[in-house]
Image: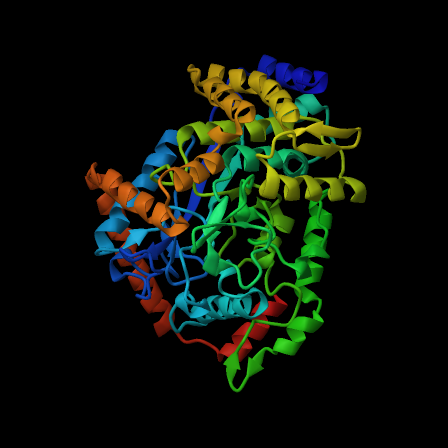
Length: 521
């Protein structure tokens, strides 16, 4: 641990030993609905799950088949994970015989038409959400949008910030600006070290051959239907997954909220010639919301985002500019196919240690050369992370992944100890120590375990993921959905149906006018 971080941590806890208690967590987890053969569901969003447009806990992402579960905010990670399990149990009751795919990369596809685009009804906002997804299809293709992941939302409690301000000796900065600056410092350090999370928790080293058109993209064959990277950790986070050439020119390195907001705002208003060729409305049908580099700010693919809860009718950037950063959303997490809901408490507690470390550690601005090193390290780890002797780039030169990773674990331990002290248990320390084995033995990583099972049992990627999907459904069904949660989710389901019906019954301007006003606001 650096001397600076040690001093900051010591000074904070001298003021209040419970400052790190009450970290806020929220989890968003995606999962494709599939039938019992592993084919992506072609059915509409189940009626028993309510309306995806207006349900606060169960919605859809890109595809009508791509469920998204959203937990409330909890200070206890065990409660957050239990709620996520309950969302799965409730959903399985409504899915008839369908399953929730247990992995990030989709099953075999006969073509893009296998991925139905999500529908949100006839209201103007419902049409906008659908057309936005049509735009994603025209820009990037449907196949990329079928990938699933986990988003981990993290924030420090309100009581933390006045003490942090006192330790920083920054009384001249408003608490709102100080908090935003601190979260951007966290984000910069996250980007410097997030390769470690991809190595430790990446779980997508293989995929269906149908996901890759033509060229195998440097991957090897395992049977007729499966491609894999022998040392890959997360193909989901590679150039095969969430990446595109158009957005690479944005070069957002998160030095300030003002720069971040201005860069995204510019991208939302700057026409992009290849998208102009697609057109907006062709033969009376919308192909996208506009021809700009980004249709809306959510189109920007990043492994972490600064976030702020929005008011009704407010856009994310407007909320950030008005009230600053409220929390960060970690978006680089694969679904772990060995776990019933894709992650567990040990991983979540490690993430808490990692994110607190990133916030408290000194975090200088990222220049162009460091931005390039960060991207190169990321590219190496997603494709070759388990390669023996793999080296990553630092400003001082090269360093082996295992050596650097072990030193980061050592630096995280004092943070873990303080988190444990606040909660009066040793779970965070155990979570950090448990990761050492993965750095000493790459085959202990989730990605290593996936490939071992594929090869040991001679399974295709589809067979492996379908097997896990069935196992997880049965495992979750072993415990009944609690009466309290059932009552809450029944209420939310009924309310979502009423809310959407009210939206569609209300007087609305013509959609063209609505869209024009929305984009100009």
